[in-house]
Image 1 (tube, rainbow, N blue to C red):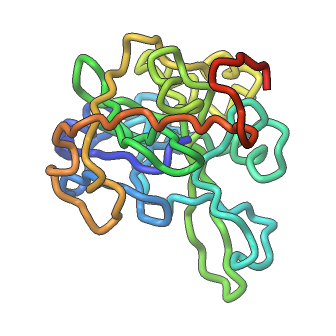
Image 2: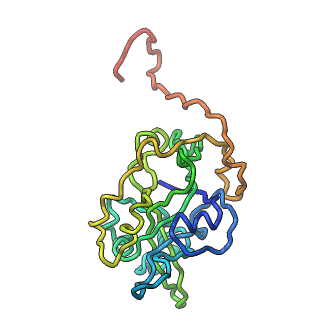
Image 3: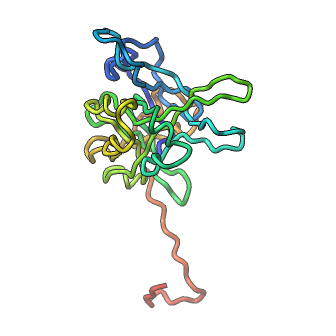
Length: 253
């Protein structure tokens, strides 16, 4: 899954990476969490021949996709991630997969090594070569009962690669810059035409850096949450024994 990420590049760097004309100024964000606004890039409306306008446009969306058919958001789960393996068929995501694919710029993401069903050691996972990445995203505009509109979105995930799997079994789908146009082209390319892009990043693409548990709290938003932390020991497995068991006796149970 991807439940936290960061975008610490400047607006100019982000705009150049995504192929946008420009972006309004925004601060570095070190701990972006679900329900907060996130930046996405979408394909622009069709342009007249010879137009110099960019092919992509930015938008801010609430991180947590709400399908158009939802009646009561209070009874609907927070869909901040979408499993790429079933997004084409799943009712919550299939319309967005066909018509509203997006790019989500990020400097990296956070993941927690599971420990006894609870969050364990947090890791800051970033491109080994530095710079930005673009996660595969989906966008849906939800119309509230009162008539107001809210743009919402989710990040697509896939099975983790070999470098990340020891931390978590899922990771965000990363779209290579050379595939931006394909992924965003919802006018001529159907989901099946871009399904090959929904794959894990190469094992050497990311590096995972252990950090302190400051990142656990959404209120902590400064760069200190990315400082390297100590990796705690793996939790010991509890061995169940029968009363008065003989330690010298091997058993399969």
